[in-house]
Amino acid sequence: MYNNFENVLICDHPLVKHKITILRDKNTGTNEFRSVVSEISMLLGYEALRDLPLKDVEVETPIETAMCPTLDGETPALVPILRAGLGMVDGFLRLLPTAKVGHIGLARNEETFEPEEYYCKMPKDLGQRKIFVVDPMLATGGSGAAAIDFIKQRGGKDITFVCIIAAPVGLEVLAKAHPDVKIIVGTLDRELNDKAYICPGLGDAGDRIFGTL
Ligand code: PRP
Ligand code: URA
Image: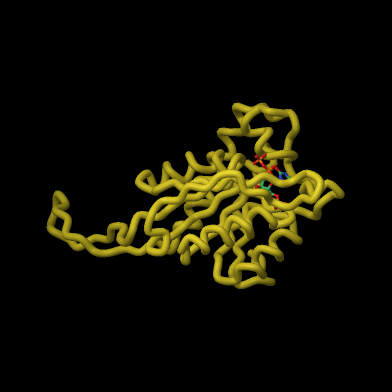
């Protein structure tokens, strides 16, 4: 847990820590990298989905009739930030197969490190849905903050951001820019280098997921 910001949760589960170590290893190949990203996404998704609303429904068990909890409310939306966020979709959808999926295409300009938008397609009625924005890496925080700005401009209100590795500076930027957004982080790394890569990090998440190194 990380106490500097009320809206931030840093995962302290040993399985998440173990699996992130596999991602960090430069000898982990594309196939294993993708699978482990998906597994970590399920574990972080489990935490992120903790606040889903419930209602009671009547169920006939083999023993008796009982009132039992089932998910309630508008179907949530999952929004991966392209490209690397796509790697987290499968794990989330295994937990919540009916989720709507929006896409935001943002790429960092490698000279200014500023995010540039190249695609956006969102499910309708964003304002009525819980929205889970996923991206493995939170480095300067520029992409995450811009994606959430964009979702809010389209009516999104109840937003959770989920990443696998964050740098302290990016976490602070995002938490300050969007204090109403819950942030779930797999692990917090030391710092950014002069190319705005996370150290020790795992390298370029998109390249490692899609084998474009
Ligand atoms: C990576 C990553 C984030 C962003 C984080 O994407 O997946 O979206 O960088 O950096 P920031 O916090 O400094 O904005 P990238 O721009 O490399 O695009 P890709 O997913 O297409 O590889
Ligand atoms: N994006 C990545 O994929 N990796 C980093 O370390 C920083 C941004």
